Length: 154
Image (cartoon, rainbow, N blue to C red):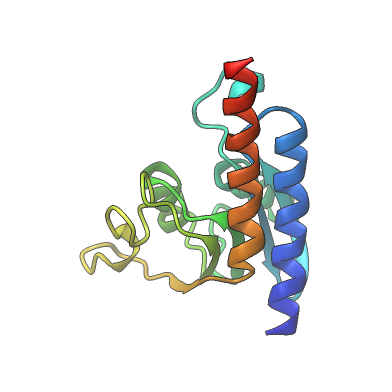
């Protein structure tokens, strides 16, 4: 599991990049055979594209690098529970395992609001683990939104 912490720390580095761009600080990395093949962070505000969540961008990069849309042998580490769009993309990309830092009680689609990844009618199952570096993943989001509220009030 020590390696898992290393990969989630890399996802947190991506979240910090998003934070520095005034994006919601979410980061993701995709790992195959113990090597990071893709990394990404939210960029929907910067690029004016609602699909540019960290997970979607990481999936696109991994598919390009690996030359396939099937990421069965890959793990994804993401700092925040995926939304419905991202959970669907994770299923479609055939990600093998998903490691989630913080839960998202407002938009989480892997257990918090709905649980798309536990739906048995889908043709692919994703193994899910919750809470990896939860405090760090949660704190970066809390700090970001606290700072955002302070800027709006000044």
